[in-house]
Image (cartoon, rainbow, N blue to C red):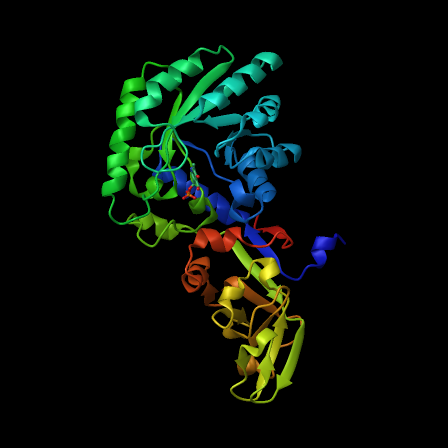
Length: 376
Ligand SMILES: Cc1ncc(COP(=O)(O)O)c(C=O)c1O
């Protein structure tokens, strides 16, 4: 038995739902290439499982954050074109060129380093010039586009394949800012349309659903492929058809009757209000269950919502299963995210409790949690 198969807390990755979500998204962006984003371990879903499934379903271009993420997938023999989305440093140019990764560029230093390296290796490299139309993060200024492109063209081994930008606020109900950004990007598209750029791309998940004019030649969906909404403010009702790909499941390893007033877990942050049956579940902050959620979340056991109680610890959490006395057993499944019977706990529910977004809930799932493909 592989060591990870002995782990009781597992992330179940429903590949059939991934396929469903991709079809839904493709239907929203007809005519555009679909370049799924698998950075940060595929938003916590397991980069290799997700990327392999995407490639097997015909998606040949994947977006990652950095060189290491692209290398991990390439080394796992997942044969795709990788676009490295974050800014890289000249010291990465050798690895970028040697592996044939596509590079998002926004500094002249990086362009020159890639030019030197690609000339040395006698290998053409594809660039995507990133323009900051309002994200306020990486990207050249819109008024620098034409000079920057001219600089890139000085080097015969560089090919500017794409010109791209990114939305910071497309997930908001009020699209005023995003529409302004889109106008800025459209002016750039117009000004560069004779310069051989093959792919203009801008849309993230929110924009795919709510800003059809932003689809251009390719879209870069992240959160939506995992079946999660970019926010609760997306207007397009189709977003309601997304299906969450990930479930976080564990098992009860210990059960104990305790009296009223019994202190539970580190710091005794909770005491039993009455004689209680308390279950131990081997999932804690080492698995990505934030300690900040202590005494605030539920787990589903035998289809029933049961309150987590006491501080979440590194490896274990306690659950009040008094309502299940006589039914619950050691070895029973405990669902932290996902469905059991008619009950469901969503990443959105946990995000609201933690004051964060669903992206962070799934991305933070610990490295030691095996990602297990189900529903292929
Ligand atoms: C440049 C870029 N494009 C696309 C995405 C995907 O965004 P989302 O997950 O909101 O679809 C991201 C994610 O952060 C990104 O950084």
